[in-house]
Length: 465
Image 1 (cartoon, rainbow, N blue to C red):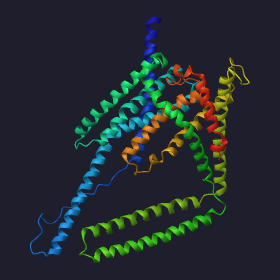
Image 2 (image 1 turned 30 degrees about the vertical axis):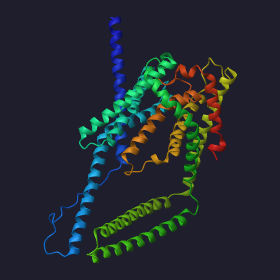
Image 3 (image 1 turned 90 degrees about the vertical axis):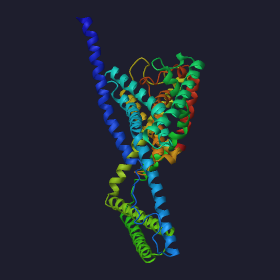
Image 4 (image 1 turned 180 degrees about the vertical axis):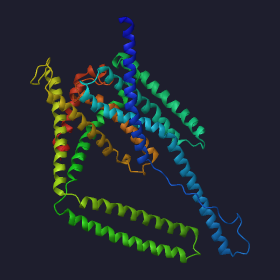
């Protein structure tokens, strides 16, 4: 009876764990889809009205009227071409949205799993934690090396129909995947399969290729991100006379809105009175009216935000800034202390901490790991956006190709962070299939040099300046 019940218990245990993973993955997929909908560029496609006249101008028109008729038809032809381009952009973005949603959910899952594991690793079953990391590793790898190239190539395809676009992008993606397999084969032949993790040696070889540049760039990105975080927090503070200053800013924007409204009125009168103007001039007037309307809408949004800030209490904002600064400084100190302790262990070859190596560390040391992981992950992500400002997101104005670039960046950072944190000593335990790699473990001198350089780059002169 016991022999037959043991496989049954393993089966139901695995079924429960897979169900939990699915229940956690579905909200992440919904959050990723909502984020894409929030930031993705959505062109407004306005179908022009059919011209009332036929292809030939009516009889009895003068030469100037015939020229005006021809210019109007050319202008409508240009508008139709622009609408077709917008249709193709929207079609390509909508078709690739599924791939982008899966990839973004994988990246978000990697970020959250790194933080949650350090907090609840003693509260849940180790098999469940390993299953989460296994699925996160597989989904992130498939998204980065498979789905994202296919999504980008799909949007760059020159075909017109959906099936033709998919066929063209799949052909080019197949060549890219072949190059990736060749790269993996070369790496495993050079270092040996035993240099990578046992469960997924081929994917880990490919991940090391992407993680090493991210780990090196992390020395530049993390200090920039930490400095940007501290600057943004200090920028939240309000002076005691902020109501007077904000009222002046609101007044300036009100006068600018009045000036733009007067300009709109003049442009509208010009468009009505000059009926004999050419199509090019009419198009220029329409562009000026559209730019003025967009500027008025922006100024009205700024006034709304300024009025909301004017009603806030500067003392409460100051207390909030002090609390955020204290949390940021605590995270920075935790990162520095943990890297320093790990570097001292490598240099002296022994445990330099006040507790014995065989005993469990105190509770504050475990808490410092969670705090350091959170601060380091946020600072590194923000720092990469500081290095690549072109990828910054704008609500409803981010092109689809920039969205793919953002997702690829988040995937790279989320897949590299476990290795980086393990190499720096910020994380003490091995998280899933990422951390215990013989290729890194067999070169302690390289890890010591990496920690020393990171400590120097994360110093107060660069981070807190």
